[in-house]
Amino acid sequence: MTSEAFVAGITLLAFGIIVAGVALGSAIGDGNVAGKAVEAIARQPEARPNIFTFLFLGVGVLEAFPIIALGLAFYLLLVVVRVPALLTHLSTVAK
Amino acid sequence: MHERIGEHFLWHLPVLGDVHADTIMTTWLVMIVSLVFFGWVGATYRSKFISRRQTVVEAAINYIADLASGTLGEKGEPFVPFFIALFFFIFLLNQFGIFPFKAVGLTFGGSPTADINTTLPYALMIFFMIQYVAVKQKGIKYFAHVTKPFWFLTPINILEELARPATLCARLFFNIFVGELLFVIIASIIQAGVMIGAINLSLLVTVVPFFIQFFNFFVGTIQAFVFTLLGIVYLSLAISDDH
Image (tube, rainbow over all chains, first blue to last red; front, side):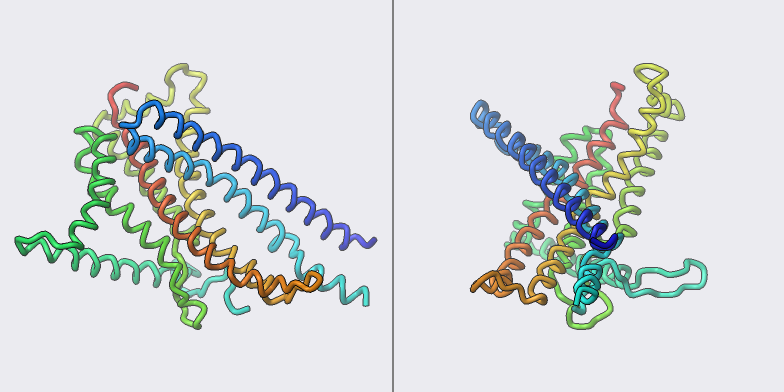
């Protein structure tokens, strides 16, 4: 295995780990926020509009971190290592 | 693939250097659109009858206004119009990326908020406005709040203050930027012509941009709302009496 193939493989692995962690964390967080909001509405149905406001605020603030991580992961994949170009290069070398 | 992410049409200006011309042009276009739209809505106030457009826009404005005046209290009453304008402007900037001006070869188009040069000034504007307002209301002793509750927490408190504009800017920028990036990823999958067994994956993913566009509309609305609401919350923290 050449060092270029190693770099491409490791970068793809890192990208996969980042996306998996991001999906797991944001899913747990979103579930927590929505579940707590449902609990609060069940306890106090008259406070529903106010709870909705803070539900969307919570989801918006929380959703930012996975999106930032995803953006940085794509930056790693497409700009720092340029994996698509690297893979095309490797396939032409292999032929 | 003509549409590229992270590449901007540049103007070479004498003092400023290279500036992102597409972002500037699109922002000006959105300013014209919002002026014309709200002028069109506001024109109905001259007649005695309540029109439908007035009802619809007032519902949205009242929502933000109630939120702002409820959180800020009496002291923050002058800032309510600012936050209403901020919400609607950022909302329009976020949603403007839906028009494919760049795809048909024009030099402008796309969401201006998908450029960090747009979101950072807005975050800094809110940051400096809050410092100015707080100093004007409480005097220079406002800055003593970084030493509370203990003096040795001062570095952490200063870091917390500075992290606010940074996260405000990064949150809006990355949300809109990743939304545009997803289209490029889908486009590259379609272009690659992927076949898995007998299934043509590239043909299947052509329906995905529809859902991404819906997701982007949702995210753009939520992020404009979050940006405005966090600005309101930070301002209310700065001008409240109980520090």
